[in-house]
Length: 259
Image (cartoon, rainbow, N blue to C red; front, top):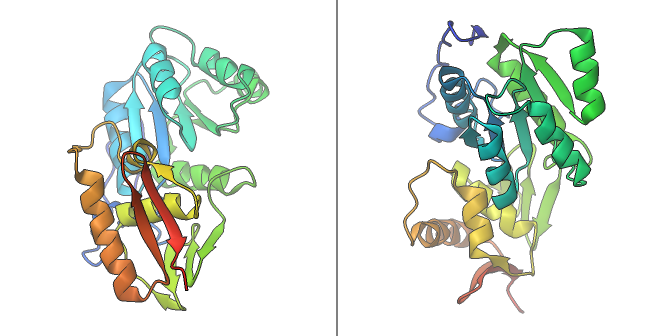
């Protein structure tokens, strides 16, 4: 269990579960959620700590320490949620939030800050934040709040995806083929989910790479192809009635096999 987190207290790592993928070893077996987050925090030790903890919880997490870096990340990638510190060295974090909402960007934003006044919280929420969590905080609470944001109707969780005889419960992180559970790694699930969300349509290779890998992941030119090969083999072995097609020079498409 994690203790309170601040600049001086470090967490006690949860026991490893050798039977689950590393990215899915979490405090709650249903917290294996592979969504892409942007973490904006200027305190290096806290930034590293939270990023590692979110990664262990199954999130793909990009981390930046300034408003300028945050804007660069937001302009180049799409995120399922943003964790935003307000006391950034080059600008107030609220300016980033104003820019997002001013541009009609509805990405869920959770403010993570030491500003504990009622007026601060009201200002943050009125500016467009979806949640507000004070430092010091407990890591399981941060994860639970993020999952709650992603379960909202406009969020990324809480949807059951189906194509042919495959069924993917995105909240429970379970993949079933003809009613039988199919064991997949965290990244294989992320890849499958993004293909299922656009079943019957071509998904660009770059989009898949952005969803599957974070800034700090070591990615080779054929990393995605290797991952796709493993996923195809498992789907075929499980009896999936469809296929993942390669559209050369463009991307990939999941579709049912023609009768």
